[in-house]
Image (cartoon, rainbow, N blue to C red):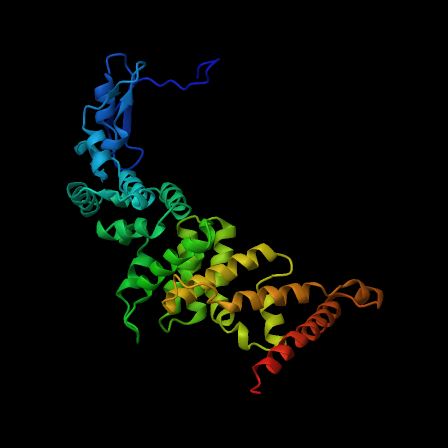
Length: 354
């Protein structure tokens, strides 16, 4: 790095395949390596351009033309030597989908060949999750999944989710497509990757008759295998376990509302509870084809109001009464139910015909 301008400098380099997977390379930084040779080893033509000190674009592989044509095209057959490029290309397709970019047919064919040849099987878990996590927080994260399915890589890196596309249900939509749609909706509701991931996994289990314990175990297994961060896994587990109750929030009595707040640890983790609501809303919107409707999930407002009312109950007076341990917990639950009774009673009055 330059001490004054803080510009970063790097020598031209080439890589030579020496083994399998992401780490199977040797790197050559010798002075004989030309810029053109360096650019030849890049993944996509739009990433294989340079600019000299005078501002002239060095573009030996027509990256500028592909940029104008909005094409994501591999530079050379060296692309096949690094399976991470499958993930990167899928991520670029998602990131630039809003601008109309598409993967070139020949590049998608090459990606499929790499999968069929077993190269995708050498991807390390940490790098898979790194690329996926970045895609989840970006624009159009569903495109990332669609591309991976097109080249058959999804069944290698996320077989649990890919198999959901093969399940028949009583509706026309299968769990895999429903999960993908919920992810699309979640991306319009929140920029947070953990909410989007929770919506994807929750919705992927919500259409068919999969038993709740089995669904939770399924989600935990996938999260652990991909080394998903613990806080992401916890949010996903809540969405899978409690989304049905969340959808029923308008008809829950005070006791059931209080139990849901307690089961989701809403009093200690109010922000996570709000994230949980958003993930559930994405599932609901996707299930009912309400992706672009406004104010179509009043359950969210009701649950937020319920939390505010119940959280206002103070534990201090119970301690002053000499209650301890389980007795405090039970008494606090009862007081919260009493606080919520007013809200549910008001709704019952409003719902009565005049």
